[in-house]
Length: 391
Image 1 (cartoon, rainbow, N blue to C red):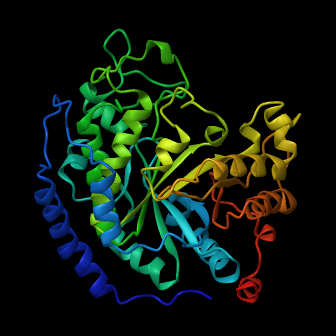
Image 2 (cartoon, one colour):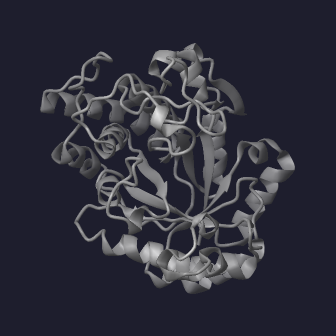
């Protein structure tokens, strides 16, 4: 059954008062500082012991079962659309919603008070008061996950061109959709995103999910210039470094972190040239989410002539590969994104449910459905009474 909502006063006191004190205490204990200049290539990245000190303090329950939906802000803004989503939560197995707090263009979608956000002119306030939204979701028994796009960020790139990936002419480099990206090597870019994530946790969201936590793949990648590149660090070390820092800071504030990765990442041995190495990312987050959309897989992947036509097998192979490689103690839990949209093949209840069942058959019981418009196949979901019966 749904968990009853906790007393928010005590929880918010811990988040806003005790957790920041813990963060400072850990910094003093390990002899570290919190600030560094952009040019300081030695800007501190916590090691495993330092992360463990923050994570273990919270006595965290990593066995949370999440069955979630991505909800775009356009749906959250629309009273009828929001009610439709909430009705799915009330009547089906869904118990979690993933909501944009920093979108694919770098817009901060809530009423942020961060000076850096104001300077970047990145606030559009579609969601309004984030604390109120967090309370509303909690009152419905919903586990709220804040989706934060990291390095794909036209707003920060435009406001701070020196932090952007640039082209050879010294202009902002843009991907095939015309979107600007910021340099993943830049510690100021890291700090900007960590400030946003911290504000979101403070507002009452228990988890921040980092998306586009990678180097770009589309467009003239060979022409991209990284002004802040440290040639001693690989792409995967850069991505994992950011996540290490994020996990350490947000764990001390009582928050969880997760990371979205390409669906093939569990099945390849390298970082795919984008900085996403399966074991590396899994070692520094709480949950790792391969985006298993069969429509994105080419012919003969996993020996399947058309992976999109076989959602069960595509999902099973990806999740199984990921599980096989996460045997180290302390590794993240797998929580895949699954496809609930149509492309070359129409996806209805049978196709969506096939992906869910494939995940279950790999002993992975948490999952999230993705539909960019927030329109979901309710017939693919178990009714709430069935969830009670199963428990």
